[in-house]
Length: 119
Image 1 (cartoon, rainbow, N blue to C red):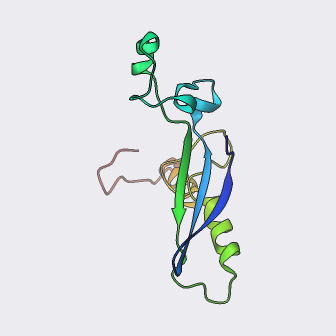
Image 2: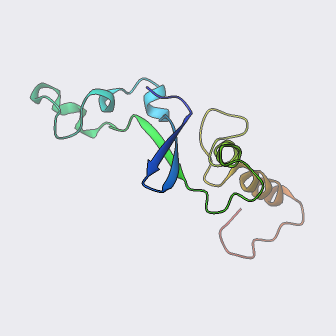
């Protein structure tokens, strides 16, 4: 099972990168999706149909313009800040810098929810 690994994949003349990791359910012991899909689940295990079947997460990156950076550096940096939580074993809904900024903003005594999303 992959655990936070970057894979390089060539699509003809376009290179993309896949950042893979195991899902939180898989890391917690829910392994049905490792060996079966909903279509290949044996009849004796139909009670598992309600369980999560995913085993891994993945995020794809494509570098449009690398500027003065190496492509590997850009993808590595993007993977580090994308959805990986800064202080806990989980995921964030926003890239880590935005998640931390939003959290700090919402905790500020002068915070006003101008977009109506609650805070």
